[in-house]
Length: 203
Length: 201
Image (cartoon, one colour):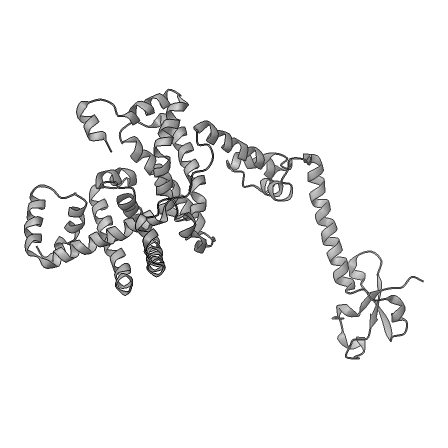
């Protein structure tokens, strides 16, 4: 057998896993082989490093009570927090059945938007869409009219009106004032810069 | 771990007695087992995941799983190898989940929890040597983390949990020959990764 073939035996020898004839043969070889002795030292040195690193790293501290009753209680409590006040949607009702930890949208909305079980379920199922509608509507409205400008100032500037009939219902009229580069507004075509829009003054 | 003598005498081991009580519904018996193996399971999980933040939740999951399935524990293997198996599998499945889309960088926080078992020699070393040593350990554990899962688990069980090949084979549910080859390959790979750095230092 060559040293290369003995290499796995070095590992086994250090781990007390060699016995009988194999052990005798290996020891005979090891006694006269400098290469294998070096190999053995190198493996042993590396094991020493690993164990020193292990001791250096330590383990995280164990906190809190660790009886099985405590673990079961903690698990139940975390489930209750997940589902208390969940919306009465299909997804919300299915969440407990789908997974112990309740990864459904109901649990997500509950834990992220309403972390306390203070808001009744019925109120919450109306409140969430209502808040969303208000946020989106506000955003759309301010996006379209752009920056508000004092309407009285507009009277002195060259202006024109433009309407947005696609918004549904009656067309809303807006003032379009000249761009800062003094280009007439018509040259912008459909892409009227937002800054140029202001609401119609009341007549 | 103390089984050989008890096997020879034909008497049940303390674990076997406690497991039997657990199977009859004795929660206090399970608490005793948990107290005995808690630190070892924490250690195992930390070495496999390398993330101190997940050790406690995973340990909790491990003991709850063990508690729920203890009635089906047949005693074909030893209790602690059975418990370690749950520990290894739960840690590995956590790593799989975490590696999808999570930032793996935060996994290495050696210094935060290094205080509990710090070697005495390190306290008397000069600051530069201490720094070099810390850097080396960091590199070493990083190399360990870069090993394939099956090699890393075998090394962790052998070097850090002090298990023999037979116990590792029970925990990992692989033949003894595979344990030998994995440990040999893991050590060879670690040496390749480490030796240039060690000689530089």
